[in-house]
Length: 274
Ligand SMILES: [Zn+2]
Ligand SMILES: [Zn+2]
Image 1 (spheres, rainbow, N blue to C red):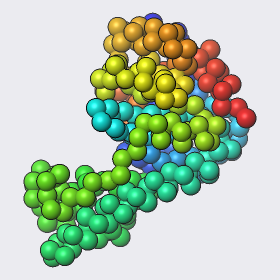
Image 2: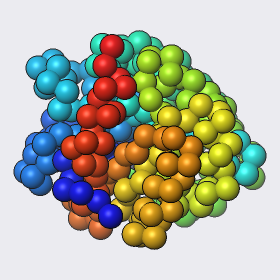
Image 3: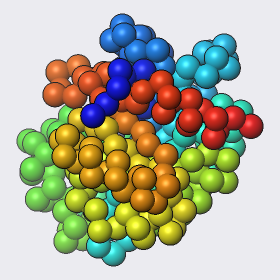
Image 4: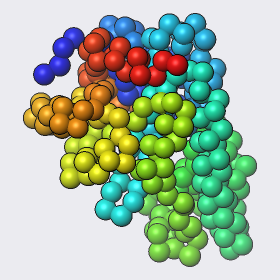
């Protein structure tokens, strides 16, 4: 069950792996009949930096982020919502985390170059701009573009798979670290799409770790999931959120297909006001 959807609190721009600019994402939300939205790019808040101050001050576009976190037997996404006055502070914290990803990709590129494979970090950054997220799929795309391999499969088989001599693992962010980072900017941390990640047995653990809320409504959740997670939210006294996980057009999840009621929206805003 879901009341009239007031806001879509899970959307991606091209600063991570979405198709549209942050402003376009907001416009698409309004066109879908929503009154408010949140942008939640993966592991970066760079897309929030240039947003019009008036929009942020009106509390109708919530700054957010979706942080990927891992530990043994647990791979999850933590959604964070926070006040717009904290964007630059969070940007600095996440940039430091991104640096370790650069180091990892740089190390992989260095190993490839030593064997005469012509790829560079500069080319990769140019290819990916304005997004600064760099991973193996992007390196594979560069290799295809340069004619080094025919397709992604070949790039991984020959050069990028976990057992390749060119492979360098990146430092993983623990769920507790992700939650602590969001709390360090007075934000609130939600567990994203638990059904999609099949981690129902970790909810209690994450609540004990500091989780503030849970994403109830998500395009991958059935009504039975929604009911189950609502009961979990009540049991653990958690806030509730929801969104489409929009990445662009041509996908099954469209803006506004899932989201939160006006009442739940303002509960979140109340918690991130400073
Ligand atoms: Zn996610
Ligand atoms: Zn997402």
